Image (tube, rainbow, N blue to C red; front, side, top):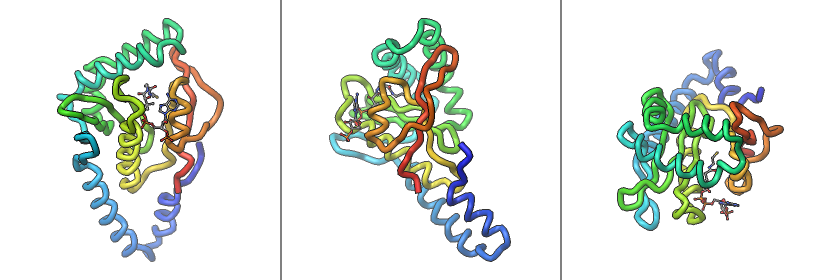
Length: 199
Ligand SMILES: CC(C)(COP(=O)(O)OP(=O)(O)OC[C@H]1O[C@@H](n2cnc3c(N)ncnc32)[C@H](O)[C@@H]1OP(=O)(O)O)[C@@H](O)C(=O)NCCC(=O)NCCS
């Protein structure tokens, strides 16, 4: 999508040097916001959201694999399901974390109950909540956390997501809108969406 974010636009205007002070001030504020967004935050019911490390990869893999089987498999061909599951191994999650994907984990009593991941600069790559813990606001808290993190970065574009077909309504409730026709990759069908409340 060929959209220029207000940040990119301001940056090019400021390239003349006239906005140097503003840029430095904004950069300092962005750095502070980003540092705050990376701090673990406690939510109601003793839930904690923090950045993931490679040590979290096995639990992330187990949660997303179970969720795909339970919620997404019925909308996929056999080939699509097997491709998606092959992407969700512990090894692949660890590789993503090492390669700079920003993962967040939601924990209740040290048990993983949800995860969100961002492929830089601003693609919501994962949003999964354990089945037993769904419809309690955890997905929204994870999304808010991921959105704040993206907003604190200086160079992001529109926030996008490729929604599995089962999750479209939930994403709409979170403020996303359909961004084009459904697409398919390796037998995996998904709905491109973008966050319509972006400023
Ligand atoms: C999508 C998902 C992450 C939502 O997590 P959650 O913790 O249940 O979401 P929340 O309780 O925070 O609800 C957020 C909003 O979505 C709505 N919502 C959640 N699940 C929904 C569903 N199945 N159908 C319709 N609306 C839904 C809620 O009503 C809420 O809206 P509201 O605040 O306006 O009432 C979770 O259902 C999930 O993990 N699904 C399976 C995995 C998946 O498909 N993930 C997307 C991969 S791209």
